[in-house]
Length: 285
Image (cartoon, rainbow, N blue to C red; front, side, top):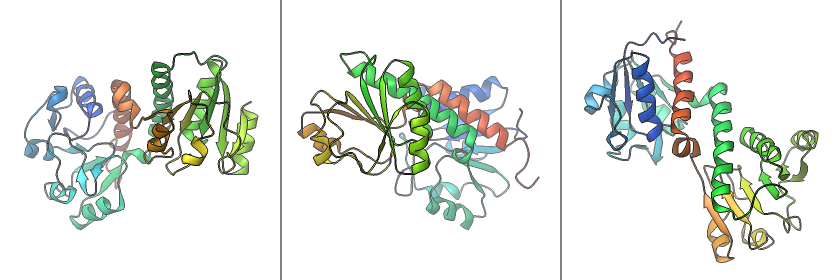
């Protein structure tokens, strides 16, 4: 699928954005990039050049701080950035917050969120699940075969991660809050636990993966895990108290944005396909 946009500007982000610029260039689109020099992205230029393109692709997530663009080299307030755009441009970003949507609307700009597209979130979840297993295996001194693994949450990532762990021979327990999700966990052949009913159920796990963006494992529950258990938090907001885990002698890692760090080329291709679908026609067509 081809885009009706004649040129692309990429501003800020991480290695995903740099790889995305290469993919767009391979598809013969003129590309200007800003804030991606450390990854040697093609089309490196000024902010004015990137901001003047027919379509501007902003990072996933859009913001790194409160109202600040996710740009390592030159972070700036999003309100300041939006003043550089024109209403007729296509402006696309990932995980757009209400504040940034309002800022764009105040400038007469339609800010489109590519992370709302189901095909992107499913593909991103698959990449996250695979990368999560890589992170765990790099830190374990044992194989996953036969290991008791706990997956907190049974959304997209939780489902895919549980299936991949089972494929490697792990003994998978997954948690959910809704009765329907617990039924699906059992239907997949996993052991099911209620997310709020973990007390007394944690003594046998070798790895815990969290996908829930709210605190699930506090110090009281973490104390029930074996001391050689690895805690891998995949959520955007911590669901595992990693400071408490460290105090208890547990190994833990907050493994956010794994596709962008461990599989940037794949993550970039996922974003490219989403924005091509979004820009195959004008938004009012």
